[in-house]
Image 1 (tube, rainbow, N blue to C red):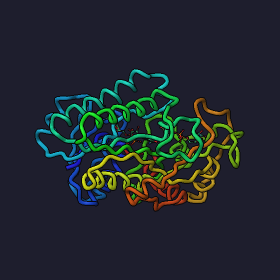
Image 2: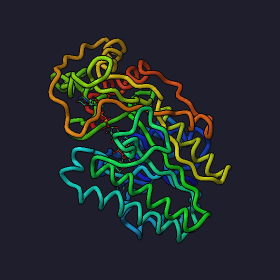
Image 3: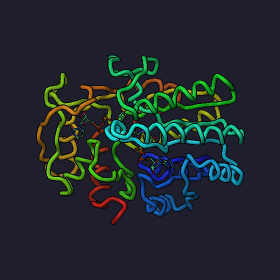
Image 4: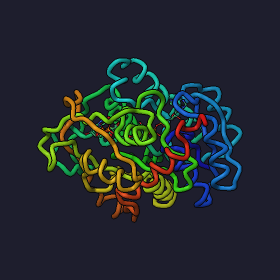
Length: 336
Ligand code: NAD
Ligand code: UFG
């Protein structure tokens, strides 16, 4: 059985579905600090399977120990974390505390129950911002926000653990910019409050929840002056997790890979693609650059191809179509 922490969140829920569809037994865990209970019913509806779930905090040792006592867990995918970059600058202690104490506590329980297969949700934000693009796994690391440092430190903690005991097998998955939603339109990204990320902001403008998009900077050194990122369909990302778990269990080795499309698109490219996919006009205004942003980054995704036989199946148009289907079917997210 595979344990997913942060299972009812955006990436966790899509991965849960993929694992069940692949034939894995899964148990989900979440404290609902950034997700809805309705996700569980939706997962059951999509997969036609029972979704085993426990409401708990990864910082709660007793609940975790109880879970490991009652279930034969052979691997863990650890999504549970706080993830808003700007908020992490305002509330660094909450981020270090939740993301690092949660990880340490979970690893302590895993060690006690001899469960050594672990997948970390890492991020492109662990690459030093001065690296040339595309980012390759061996490049220097660093970060620009407390959130980013929690991912950097999480990687370091796990590397030290691996060095201490060769039984540990860790997949360090560095995600680029996940967007899109399940093609059923039943699950998708449902941020609380004003979205920080581009795609949920665009979809909320499209359903009339927000008046216009603010584009942060029109004078970046990119092909049209707007920021360039590597958008990856959440369905492709979810499939990457299934491949990573297969790899840990079968190859019995650790790995560090980028999960990105390997291509960069600008904010305006995404807006144009979204308008085409949705038939909706997205009014926008170019405003000042957002502090902490960089002009462009995208992945070299060839190592994931080589080690996991994984490559993307969905392009930017499909990402926009699926994001739109999700948002237009669920204008208020899971609270409809
Ligand atoms: P999300 O907020 O939708 O999901 C995270 C889930 O973890 C939420 O359901 C939340 O309730 C839960 N959670 C948080 N702290 C918890 C705790 N202490 N105990 C139990 N549950 C807890 O975020 P997401 O986009 O699905 O991201 C999943 C993971 O991927 C995170 O670790 C995030 O840092 C990482 N990541 C996300 C992105 C992105 O752009 N979405 C990019 C790179 C990495
Ligand atoms: N952008 C806008 N307007 C908005 C939101 C974003 O113009 O309202 C622009 C940004 O300036 C950037 C691009 O859209 O050029 C993408 O911005 P996001 O906030 O969607 O994504 P980031 O690349 O800034 O960061 C995201 C996650 C981080 C993660 C990183 C790499 O938020 O946690 O991807 O995985 F580390």
